[in-house]
Amino acid sequence: MRNSTALHRVRSRAATVLKLTAAVCDRLPDAYRTAARALIDSRRPDRPGSWRDLPALSAALATAARLAARDVDDCRRLVERYRQEWAELAAAAPDLAAVDLVLAELTLAGTERARLFKEPTA
Image (tube, rainbow, N blue to C red; front, side, top):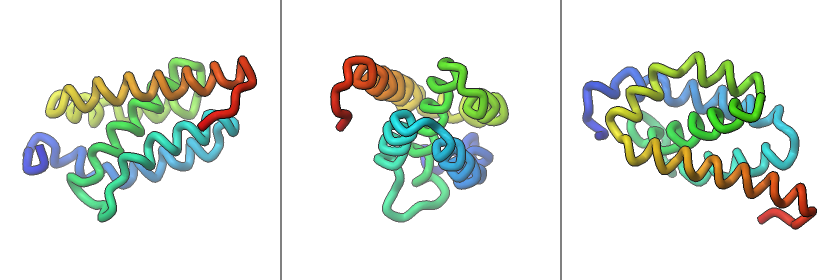
């Protein structure tokens, strides 16, 4: 995957998308912000750059997509803007994209459940 020419454009935009996603996350309500940042940051590499950013990018776009499904307009715009890059990443690494969507949904659903039942979040 890391040397895939099909992912050249995705790799070149990963840092920009991650910065935009971080800015969007910073404007989220506290519970969503904490959960989204924790998920995305857990996939950030020790030495960012090029192909090393792809797992974090996948997590960021999956999280944004799940927040967009919850009517978060900034996330909807982000997903629409980078739909092609996400599609290219998913075509090259379908398991990564699928797992990240599930993780994002479970993370956000867990956050909502904790808020609903006033349980402390991890």
